[in-house]
Image (cartoon, rainbow over all chains, first blue to last red; front, side, top):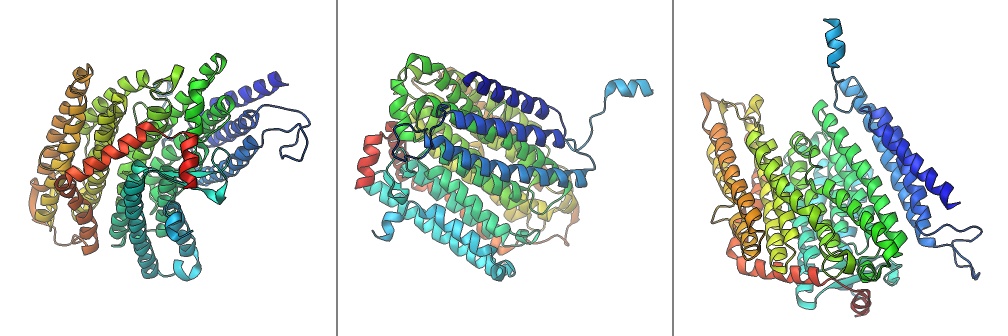
Length: 117
Length: 505
């Protein structure tokens, strides 16, 4: 289980980072979402993975670490708020600047310009 | 329990409640009411911060356990001399900035005052928190307020600079959580005192993971502090936003510096066993390069606000040097310089706003334009601030830099630090002289009579900040003494045992 979990988190962060390396706000938002999912899973795993163990101390001997779950809960809430802000900002940027490139203007491709000439 | 026992949490609660109250329709409809409430809340904050400062000076470190849950699992706020000083600094800045904004900049958009309050809440919380996760939470509070404040008033340029700023910080927040997860996985706690206890006892298997977590944290704090190579967002962000917001942001980079100090200077400092001083080999070259690149950018700046933003970067480099030096003397010198540079940079941003306002279309760019109506007054303040920022006597910049230079005098690092700091001072002298002469002397003869005169509130705000610079010199003895106390408390750290003892008291 640990292996699958680790591979999932790693794959998700890799996808997120790949998306964020592109210079457009749309892909950036998608990348950030993926990365924040990966973060949440990672935080959840940081207390150790266990099957069939409740997080709250209900008298049983066997319980999972409750702290990471509290952390994940906070991180999810904050992550949602931040992503929402980023989406609104991206839309505002699209409207104000006329494109969705992060620098506010599409970079000119020197090769394409040569071909045109 | 009296009110005094709850003193520590007030710098977080006051701005929070005031912000919420300001959002109610009755308040949000009337600007004069908002101004009055924010200003009085700021005065109250300043009083609270000062009394916190005095309490700590008399009784030592204060601990506040929220909901009376004890330390490693419950949330604690810890106020030592350093954090109280920072809270005080943010209160002073908040007061000056709101006063300046009341002259009209708060009219350019909605919810300026509540946002300032949320911003102060985040900053104060970040200084006072006693565990790493709440540091993250307060970082997010101050960031989301700063995102909205920065774009306040709108405009193409601001939106574009804000996109960089917001996305970089969002990526930073994700990295922050990764780092916290890693550290929690190996240490099993996120309380600063508890972490400091557990780091020296780590097993060999966990060393590498903990180290990667700690260095990831360094990258995150470095992004907030604008240390090289994570500083590219700063000049554009600070120079396009509105004047009071830029001045308030002067303390934002210091939040990053403060966190580096607390985590990498102390927790992973000398007592950390195998992991002692892991950040130092990285920080040394970064600190020197931040000064060098910042100084080059200062020379290349085309407007006063960009120049001032680059001076912020130079001051960040100087502070990183004092963290690297890793001695109590250097720490106290750094704390003095931190207070000075925050106040001086904030004042310079406010002045740049006034200059921009009086020069019409030329704004604060270094080109010839019509003369400013209040050139003499503004020029006098400019000279004072320039002297402070360059680090010439008799103002506080000189003492701050001299203390840092003195603390490195006997070590082998003198070879690096002295030239970097002195040459960066010389470069700021050149750049600021050029800036001053082209702003105030290269006028094209006409008088700009249509330009706005500075509002008295704006002058008052500027006066508050500028007058603090000579005060820091006149009461230099008391201030350095307090900085030494802060450095001592910071460097000795706090173990969980002590934390419990203090909170029981």
